[in-house]
Structure formats: structure tokens, C-alpha cells
Length: 370
Image 1 (cartoon, rainbow, N blue to C red):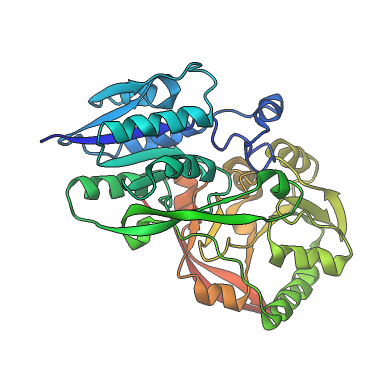
Image 2 (image 1 turned 90 degrees about the horizontal axis):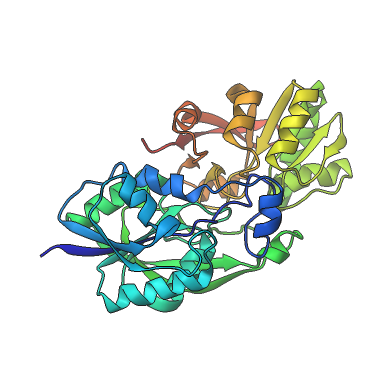
């Protein structure tokens, strides 16, 4: 009997990333005003191109919520939900579509979006149906997402073939309005079912704290301040480890944003992609400092989309500096990249040095799933 698979896309997911809004919740109009473009349909297409057209049919939604990409890739599908406004969908559309999925007894839901999308889906299906999330949001703290679109396709193929165990994964979300004001307020909403394969699924984000870890951050910051005296523009990503550099410099850091420093002075605060590119026009000698997200291990592609593939290419892979405490590295098996540019992700892959204390580094493997 042909399997029925639910498929939906949140068309606005991730639009706030490149433009520095740290999400799209409640700020869609501002995202558009800043020049944000939809990205989730392209992310979903990346996944669909690697899915084997096997003995299943997608049950999906009209227009940009699923139909458009399924038609492009010539999948068997049936439209079971039509949003009132196919050009401007809402979370209510996601919720209504999921109610239809339940009515039609789908065996799994493949979706493209971020934590808000995962949360809306979970509010209806709970733990009744397994999920696979194609990552397209800005933060993605939940553990229902694959590490990138290709990983989602591999998970899907193995699920259809009956080769994966089903396990539970956290549905997490944060208050984006607080997040934009440098307040991290995360909440666990429940445990969804997912087809699981270790290398293909991201972990939920963890936050580390200990007194020794704080001292370790201070030592990393001291070393960073030394090598930052080379006259380069430093584009510095989010996180408490990078914030410690600013603390020692006496500069206020955007904890959850991207800032720029040159010669110990703040050049740009809470920057979006376009603002970073303009700074690179003015200061072509530049470097990037990033720290991996929790135990997820992402150095690019989660929470710092402002440091885009274009920014990385302009700066140069050789000018990327990764910093992380020893505790974080001990809890992080591999580092991950998901820039949206597969060729760049390949170039970023391999063993790299990670500054982990004063004048100390560890070698860590960066993975890009091909």
C-alpha cells in the first residue's frame, strides 16, 4: 500500500536572518522592508532533489506551502489544504494543514521551517506522527531538524525503506522579541517523534556555565585581544564566549547578534548582511571570529546567518577564527556548517584549529554532509 507523507513549507521561515532581525516572528514587514527574500522553498527543493521517488505520495498544501516545489520536482502529490492567502501564509495555515494530515492518517510529516513551525506542528500532532524538519529558520533550537537539506533527504529515504528507529526529540522555541533585545528566553514545549540517525539530526541547543568555564572564556578573550591588534576589521559572531572579548575591551556586545571591531574600537553593532558587506568594501582586510552553538556545533548557518556565504567568500576561509571553551569542545563531537552554499560548505570542511584557551588550540573536525 502506498505510504502517505505530509509535506509543508513555511514560506517566510528564515527571512529575518540575513537582514539581522534574528527571526521573522512579528517582524515580517520589517524583514521585507530591509530587502529579505524567501529562502525556505529553495531549502525544500534541495531536499526533494535527493529524495527517491518511491512508493509514497505527498499530501500537501497549495502554492508556496508545498505545491510549487513538488510540481517542479514532479512528485506524486495531492493538495489537501489551501491557505486563504497563498502569497502571505500564517501559523494558522500550518495548524490547519496539520489537522488535515491527522484526518488523512499520514505516516510522517516532512516540513521546512524553523522552531516556530516545529512548535505549531507539534501543537496539533503531539507524538502521534514522526517529523523530519528541513532547517530554514534562524535559530532552530529544536532537535527535530536535520543538519542540512541533504541530511533531511537521507533521513526521509531511510524512513521510507523502514531502516530507521523512531525516537523522541525536544521541541524548543525562544521568545524572538526578547531575543532581539539580547535576552535568551527558551522553553521546552514537548517531545516529538523523529526518525533518528546520529550524524543526520542536530542536537537541541545547550547552554554551558561554570566558574572554570568563565575563566576559560576570559583567557580566550585575552588571547583574542592580542591577535586582534593586526589592523584587520573583525566581524564577530554571537555568543557568550565572543562577548567576553568585548567585556575586556570595555565595549558593549550584541550578545545574540554580529558586531564589528577594528583596532579595539566598535565599528558596527548588530549588523545585517548588507551592512557587513558595506564594511568590507571600506575595510577589505578582515577576519571573522565565531563560536559554535552549544552542543549542536554549528559555526555557520544557525543564529548567525548575517555572516552569509557571500561574506565568508569576501573575507576568505583562511581568515576565519573559531573560539570555544574546553568544556564546550568536550561536549561537541563535530563542528557543523550549513551556509546554504554546498561548494563553500565543502571548502569549510575538514580539521581546523579551535582556540580554546590562552595561546592554546584543539583540532576539531568540521563536517558538511555531501
